Length: 328
Image (cartoon, rainbow, N blue to C red; front, top):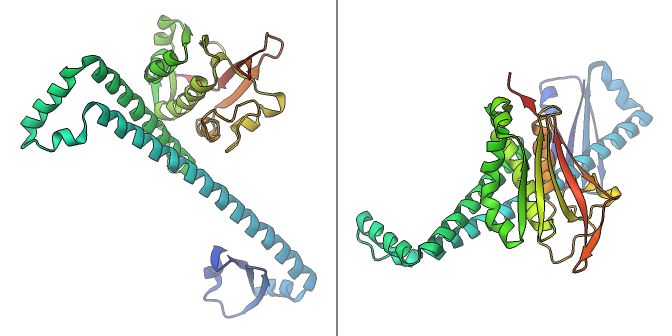
């Protein structure tokens, strides 16, 4: 048996030395390369391997590569979680602001009991019903943002199990899209549906609703940001091919970016610097699609009319989700 321990800057990256802790006949070598310490332990007949300089050098080289890979993965995960945590904090802050805009925290401080709190809140709401309605819809949007980010975080961390149910795809999409109506309106973007309600009720899909919500939520978030103003988003579900597609005229995606846009922190080359985003949403989309055993891709139509507005290049883009299944 051969076991190893890898330490970098005093931190243990990997160790299985406990498996040989009780062995009497062992041979040990240790090498230090900068801040990396490699310990290799052999027992039984494997001890002779550690008598060969060539084998030792090969083992050390391999261990160095493993250690560097582990650190690289840990660094990527740390960056991923830092950005995701930042998004959660930002969304929570926006949620608090939305609540504060209609029911200021200080307004409840003078209440003596819950009954008086109800009276105060009713008075505040009645002062400007339209503003209260707008604020409540904003709160709904922030809550669904938070839900999608929490579920996305669970998928990224690997602590999520599939929860399969039967769902009407049209109702699923309507539930996910309605919180975006205010943002779509502000950008003068409309939704066009190409899904037969009767067929959607008859042919329900089998999927994990919350995980599918993560995919669609982030796709829509990007669509709101990057779709050309005064245009539309076409939503279609092909019950024969079992493909869901979202088509829009949005910021041009170049041929060499079709896979890159699903990488962590990647921002498209045609996205202006002033546009918000950390390049996380599409990465989460890809990870959630993998979790559901689905494929996600984008198909630009370079042959169609491409235009430029206010220095931004637009192109027809279709995002396609494949692999959904009908319930039996």
